[in-house]
Length: 222
Image (spheres, one colour):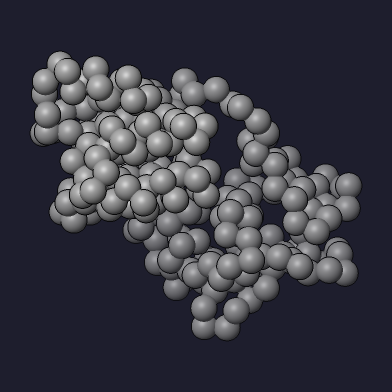
């Protein structure tokens, strides 16, 4: 699952990023309101962890702006404020939950997981590239109308490439998406997995979709 963390304190941001990575979340980060609204608009997110005390626009304003844009991603506000009025302000702004600093990471993790479990599935998450169609919710993959069976890791690699369609994806990004930070991104496991995925979605077809970008990574697209 992909999570957006909006926090301007570098140490706190690094600690949260590391903690969620260890729990197998893919983490997108932002340090101010403009970065947060842009990321929320273009990324497919399971939840947003949003610090109230941001430079410029605060977290309450960011939350209101996201809701005005009809972005329904669950939002958990983080703040050092403990006043009842601030909690009410956050919930009225459209936040789904509220956690006061300092907090235990385990509690934050539990709250984020609860938010991601209860959010409704608004629409199928279907990606189409050329004659390939992948439903990221049901994990159904078809090419040229033909169903393709993928293993869990093969599908996660395909999902990573699809979410970065047209852009070069480096080994570190693939590693963070498919494995975790303890896996060596330069071990040949990535090449083996790419070869297996190619054998299923590229080799039987004339048009190739997975392209190796020398010394950089891989790009997905026609």
